[in-house]
Each structure stands twice: as structure tokens, then as C-alpha cells.
Length: 309
Image (tube, rainbow, N blue to C red; front, side, top):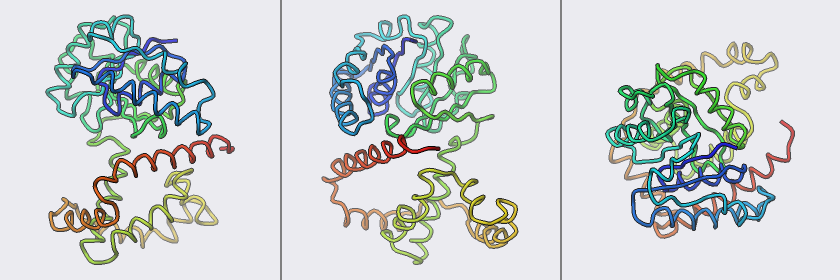
């Protein structure tokens, strides 16, 4: 089992530690902020208990948590690591400095992966001696419940490194997808951006309320999308499959997209949506509702685990 180093112990870092530890890997976690790694261990213990209660891990939570060790220094965290998962701030200058240290300190065979949500690896690895071993492994939050991981290499990333990382992610129970080239925001965020922008536009233009737009997704599109993607969805929505769907609905769908000009989140609409959400959920209840979301995701994950694909 590869030794894993998790650099950055925030929400994503602690979640990655759980993902690797529940699959049997020894994990060291480190964060430059005092007390951050110890706080992450508390999160790990609590979430593993929830996962066990939901039937998503069979092993005792304490046994899984014991595989995660807090490192006192970055050097200690990286010692002997074969895969490094970086989870630092989303600023290119910070990524560049962090990866320079990782490249200097890690053994030559270690893979260096970033959890960045949108900064391409080419923006912070170009000048590194070991740039061929660097890539993005972008998770969905929280990765211990939502398994998708986008693997995005820079133009100089060794294809073998991408394949090796894809294999590791599959072995630890994630669902890796590989981008064949860098794009702004990667793929998952581009898909999400299209839907979120249209949701804002519909509210801005007085077409539908915030609550009802949410219902269109959670009680409509989202039910299908929890177990199939857009291409399979349309393939099943016409008797003759994709070609038949496009023949029937292509003009309608194409006409809709012609109306969807770029949307830059105008302040009045953002305020309107924010006020609607705060009317539905007070600020001091966001954490409580987030925990509810995670329990629902656990139930969904448990259901999907028991179903045939």
C-alpha cells in the first residue's frame, strides 16, 4: 500500500485523509497553521463514525483513524510518500511556492497532485525539475461521499503519472475521470457553471422563484443525474437514442442555448437569491444543514452501493 502525504488539513485535506485511510493506506497529514492538523483529526474521527453508522465502512472507525498520523513538519509528512495530495489556498503564487518545496523534498518516484478547483497545473509547475510528475486531482466536496475525481495533467505531465494516479483513485473507491487537455475550470465546474448561471438568469428575468428553480433540479433533473449522465439521459429519452433525440429536440435545445449569453452574476440578482436563501435558512443553521446534506449523501451512497450498475 502506498504511503500518502496530505498537505493542507482543511475540509478537503481531512476528507482526503479519510478516503485514503479507509482503503488501508498509511496517511500523514500536515498543515502550516498551528492546530489545523489536530482539528482535522477531530473531523476525521467524527465523519468516520458517521460513515460507519451509515454502513459505508465496515471497519471500526478508530482503526481507520489510526492510519492517519499528524506530521510535525512538512519534511516528516513527505518522508517516504508515494502520492502527495496538496490542498492549500487557491492562489497561484501559493501553489507555485508549495509545489517547489514538494518537488525539492519528495523522492523522484512520488506523484504530486493538487486538489485545486480551477488553477491548471501548467500555471504552477512549469519551472520544476520534476514537473512531469505533477497533475491536478480535483475532488468534489466532500470527496469521502462524492467519489468523482478529475485528473488533469499539464502539457508536460507524464501520461504514466496520470495512469498511475487513476489506478490509485480507483483502488481507494473514487471514480476518476481524465481530461485530455487543460480547460478553464476543468470539466465538472464547467458543467456546474452552465446550470448555476442559467438558474440565476431565470431568477433575474422573473421567470421563476429561487425555491422553485431549486425544485426543478432536486425533484427533476437531479433524480436522474444521481445515477446517469447527460448523454445517457438523452439516449434513453427518445426511442431511437441520441440521434433520434437530436432530430426531435435539437432545434428546441439549440434555440435555448442561443439565448444563453454569458452571465457575470449581477449584484441585484445575487442579493435577491441570497435574501431568498437566508429567508429559507438562517445563517446560523448553515452548518446544521450541511451536516444534513452529508447524511443524505451517505444514504444515497449506501443505496447506490447496493444497486447494480
